[in-house]
Length: 347
Image (cartoon, rainbow, N blue to C red; front, top):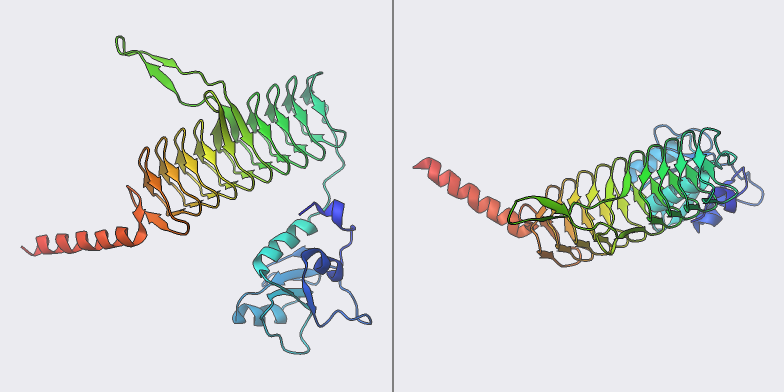
């Protein structure tokens, strides 16, 4: 989905929004009737005239229809009584609501480069890029059209950032990293730092850093949360594939490969050379050892632990515990342990 400034006029009517969402009309939008202007999305409780809300259950539908909202997003199967306010029918109301929020965002401020920012002469900056106060863009970096660079951001030499990205304040992107289009990086994130790799001298016990000269590739439509860190590859690359969403306070080690549309919750740590397959979901505080594999579509519950070189496979299979096991097996073992403890206590 493209930005509002590219798709829709400054004032968006319900009819225009419905077309953009691919929604079907259900009463209230006739050629003779008014076509309300939609200004924002809202919760049902806080809805005001001009707001769009969504409903997925009977209770929320009744509240939505009784609210001050201009219109309601509902599923294609939902029955709405005659005389109610306009509704838009879609296959996935929550998803359509999120997409509507993107479309309704105001156009960004006019692009500008702050006088206190430092842009190296050899950096390539598109004409409509915004750069905030005290940002630093090093030699050979390139920034694509429509990208916004926040205050205090450091972009290293040779970094390539695509179009329509948003880099929030105090982000640091080390040299040589590549970001695709529509990437969002939240405040304080560090991308492309050296991985944690050392070689121990068996004679002296001293450590020498293994070369950390690889790259970091972040594909289109990735979002990375505040204070998350992603290390560069050691000799090759670390890659975050298209559409992946990383929460705050996550660490991704060197040489990792995070698949398309992966979702990872806060405080998860993934050790070097590990792989997370397309569409996998990792709960909060998951710990993943080096050279481990989480297969496509696997779900790992919060605080799950994956030992080094282990594989978790099976689309839709939920794993839990440390070491992570299928949740049914994990719960059965917990129940068995509880019975053993109970019997021990009775003796």
